[in-house]
Image (cartoon, helix red, strand yellow):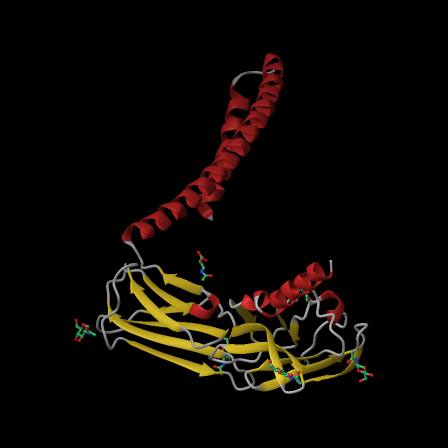
Length: 307
Ligand SMILES: *[C@@H]1O[C@H](CO)[C@@H](O)[C@H](O)[C@H]1NC(C)=O
Ligand SMILES: *[C@@H]1O[C@H](CO)[C@@H](O)[C@H](O)[C@H]1NC(C)=O
Ligand SMILES: *[C@@H]1O[C@H](CO)[C@@H](O)[C@H](O)[C@H]1NC(C)=O
Ligand SMILES: *[C@@H]1O[C@H](CO)[C@@H](O)[C@H](O)[C@H]1NC(C)=O
Ligand SMILES: *[C@@H]1O[C@H](CO)[C@@H](O)[C@H](O)[C@H]1NC(C)=O
Ligand SMILES: *[C@@H]1O[C@H](CO)[C@@H](O)[C@H](O)[C@H]1NC(C)=O
């Protein structure tokens, strides 16, 4: 029985020191944001009077000492680094960092158990800092003279410095010497703005793409400037024609309806007048009224010609 317990605890200890610490994949931290560096000790270290240290390379960033019942005795940290208070009980020793600091290189963080001079490594985690760039803004300036077209590609707020690629018609790389790229770090932050210029002799219908690649983020952002094609112009023109002709149809339709309604009304009035006229005619001689009608009809016409 005692042998089994011993064997078990020996197994657990070896687990503690070897197996748990194989987390070698890098954690991606976004610059300026908090991050958690995972480290889970299973089972939790129930040894009495444990002191643990989280280190970045050689520098201690957090130190904590526990009594046998898991209560914290003493501890301190730098730059707001922390671990959960019940870490000794749960074995969740993950290190929380308030803000990820920009660093071009991968940083290694290690958790150690300290007893006297001896340090036992419990966890090792690598951290890569990065930040997303904005979708690039691509501007095209047709040359006023000559064949050269200038392009400007701008993206902001990323980390680390990105690579900028240009493509003409999705396949061709621009000729050497036609690209000029400048990445500037922002004055009040570690992030970068990047601006790239391209000057090439291309036709007006060529498509030009600018890609901002941030390999740390595994992110490539692309913007494309589409060339002016003859058929797109026709397309736009025919669309305008469509709108115009539809509007024209509506206007003409309305006019026709109004005209017909007016005509119907006019017919009704003239019918009534005719009726009255016939009634009138049945009582009067024929010649005089027709003459009167003619002069009445003549009057507006003469007024029109005056105007
Ligand atoms: C733990 O530390 C306390 C005070 O520092 C001490 O009295 C106690 O004996 C220690 N326990 C063990 C198991 O070392
Ligand atoms: C450990 O604690 C951190 C912070 O509270 C949490 O984000 C993480 O999910 C925990 N990990 C485990 C395995 O419980
Ligand atoms: C440190 O470890 C060595 C061997 O690994 C051991 O002989 C020594 O007693 C340990 N010292 C302390 C203070 O635990
Ligand atoms: C960086 O880019 C942003 C967005 O385009 C702009 O507002 C800011 O002024 C730029 N900063 C520098 C230093 O170029
Ligand atoms: C672009 O074309 C003009 C005239 O066609 C020529 O003078 C100029 O050198 C060309 N530029 C490039 C970069 O090829
Ligand atoms: C990078 O992103 C692509 C697609 O977004 C994905 O297929 C690939 O697995 C990612 N690679 C890594 C290393 O995350």
